[in-house]
Length: 104
View 1: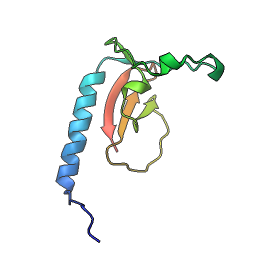
View 2: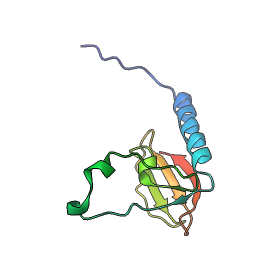
View 3: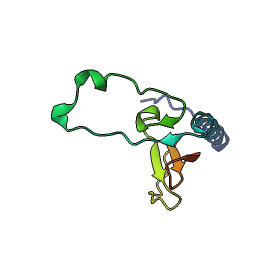
View 4: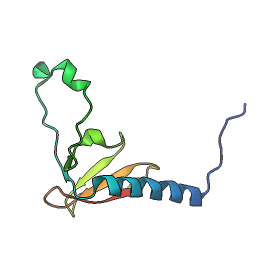
């Protein structure tokens, strides 16, 4: 049985990561992270769940990021050391302001 795999070099992976990081560093520059407020399930409006996150140009929420993104709050944020290709790591300062993005 043949599988349609293509070989990707380390250089190509590094280039893809750099493109991802550059894109998100530009999108999030100067923004502040706002945690989503969770409503009790009996108060959730079904129509609200289908609405996309609003981009005000000042803040950002988890919904605006790729699904696998992780948010690291503060300079001493704990994180696992597993490496995931294509995962975006969003680093914040102690006030929730975006510092930088990394991949992995």
